[in-house]
Image (cartoon, rainbow, N blue to C red):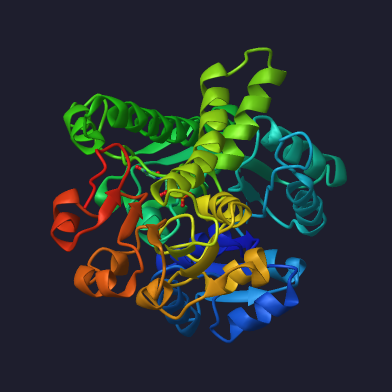
Length: 438
Ligand code: UDX
């Protein structure tokens, strides 16, 4: 089949590359000329494990190409995916749909032959209907259907999530569109991946409900962690104890500094607004949004307390991205925590394996950028683990002990066990577990 993917952001690029790897002919379209030029040269705009090889192989096989020309890109397409950004609109928390509607109008003008227009961007309920209205108004003659096909890709594991998903959700009432969508995802039938066909509105809401539920699960275990610290319980054991219950499930029960990233913060806010507009306030998700924001601030206070004040202190920070295996810093806890530490009088020396360029855009000259984990720690008063990159999981604790001025570790991802730190004379503070003093 022939696919046009409008937007070469995270979702568009990964989805386009994976569809081409399934054997379809895919053209990725983006207005950003520099980005398309770089993609044509094999340079990826984001860090995602395996993406460069996947793109390279499929370009070479002639199944994947890039263009800035939308008309050329969508010519003869069986399906056109809209995968443009839907940032949070300033001021009111709603998803900004400007790019989605602009893409719909441009697609309308270039449609030829029956086409399924598929919304992959995360959009509020009713957006599919509006996309259909826009296209119909501009092109009353065109043969098309508008379907919703939300993505559930995790950054850092996006290719695997696309090729081995738990399910594929497709929202459309058109049997013809169902046929096209089945054909597009047919390679997944080998693994018997469930295809969930629903109405468009249901598919749109399913995406928000999934992300809001996961954000709630994380926030739940984060608050359990706070209780654990007060009553002398261990959050990791609680998580295991409840996670083995099949009704609860073990995933997304890892307590930490609060969720970040491109989806959870944005989608929870958007869902709260949608619910309020519908006259059915979503109080749980509102509480999650508030608790998560407060948590990031509280993490800075925790570091300050662990150091007995940070005025004039040097803090070594390991990890700046919102999670490992990505250079993405959108809504990363580091963005809240570091400025608060600086405000309290600390200087920061930081290292992240992939997001140093991104970090410079956010922090400018306010922090020191180091070449590796150990370089951050020379003469530092404490080391803080903010992101659980693999390379921070097996640090040479003896060496760290020699580098630090004071042996204080604040491990906001519970990468280490207290028993590992004790022999090295550390004061060790983690999440939802008793702190240990040297
Ligand atoms: C998420 C969803 O998982 C994905 O399905 C959706 O389409 C996009 O949003 P992503 O933002 O890439 O994916 O990352 P994810 O792995 O879900 O983590 C989100 C945030 O939650 C991160 O900040 C992570 O550190 C945090 N998290 C996750 C926890 O604090 N604890 C956990 O147990 C899991």
